[in-house]
Image (cartoon, rainbow, N blue to C red; front, top):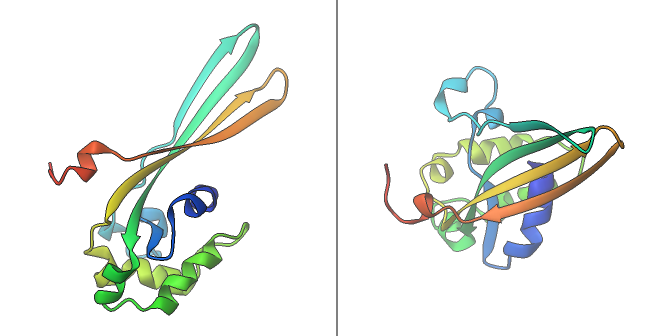
Length: 149
C-alpha cells in the first residue's frame, strides 16, 4: 500500500487534493476487526513460458481522492492531513494518528470525491531471476457513477 501511495500521490495530490486509503481490515486495530471490509484479494498467476516458470502477482489497493476543504469542513484539521505525508516514506507502518484518522467518523462516513483502484503488479521470471514491478491506476465506473449496488 505504501509503495502505491508513494507513486500515485505526486501525480494526483495537489494543494487542494489528498489521496487517502479507504479503510480496510488491515488498517484496523486488533479487537475491532468486524467493523471494516476485507481488502481485495491478492491475485497470483503461475505459468510456464519458454521453459521458465513465471508469476504475475497483482495487489489492488482502494484509494480515494479527497478534497481537503471537504475533510476540513467535517472537522479534520490540516495537521491531521499532514500526517499522511509521513506515510510516504519507506519502512514505516501507520502511526497512531493515521489510525485515528481512518477510524474518525468524519472520515469513515465520507465518500471520496473520486474513487481510485491502484494495482501494484509484479511479474517474476523464476528461471532467470528477474522481475519487474509496475502500477496501474484506474477510476472504476461502478464506484464513481453514483449508483450503489
